[in-house]
Length: 313
Image (cartoon, rainbow, N blue to C red; front, side):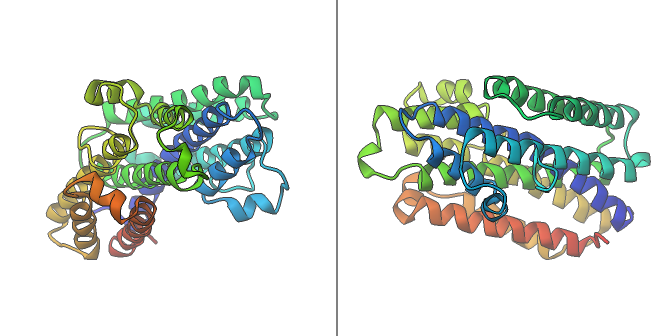
């Protein structure tokens, strides 16, 4: 049985690798949506900061929601614990702590990503260079994931690592969906407009789901279809249902290995059942924002329970 401290290191290493990528995706979503604005784009950038859960911390440092300020805070600022630079640094520190539980390839790819991003994010980013920087973050984190998937034994080390990845990913997908629907539609007249459709398309691109969405829904950018894809579709690797399918699987592996079920197993099963909605229309009728807010709170609760049940200390 793994020591709780080792399980903790593996779990948070993978959460922070996923968080670094997700933060880049969030900034990418903001950049794409800001480009649809003919006038002031500060609302889009404000919504990105809200989605990142960094509204209060950002307001303590900046008075304006500009591309430069938001990108600097969410990508480079080490005083922001969820920035890309902070996340990759924390991931590397956790990886170093559990070095003996990782394959050489996984450790080296993590270390190399840290060095590459430290170099890329050393100076303030010119807005024209922002897409290139965001692509670099996504590429470096993908290389870590590739090394991890290709070389790690499928045991409890793998299970705790995957729990971190999928809990973080589910949180991010819910936040991106929420910020689009709740914050970016100030007028009901925008719904279904060309601008609205372009913003939905931007959301799909930010979670690398644009092409695959077209395969499933034949390019109709309907809010209900996109929410269905990112919440319910069990084959879309960033959907909430996909994430919870694997969270349940890895928790069940741990339950079997250790011969014990915990509160986290029950909570995960309840959340998974909540995602098995009859129709996405039911979610919209009840309120998409309320559904996503509840999901984010329950997902956070599950993370706390996993830490408690498996003694992450």
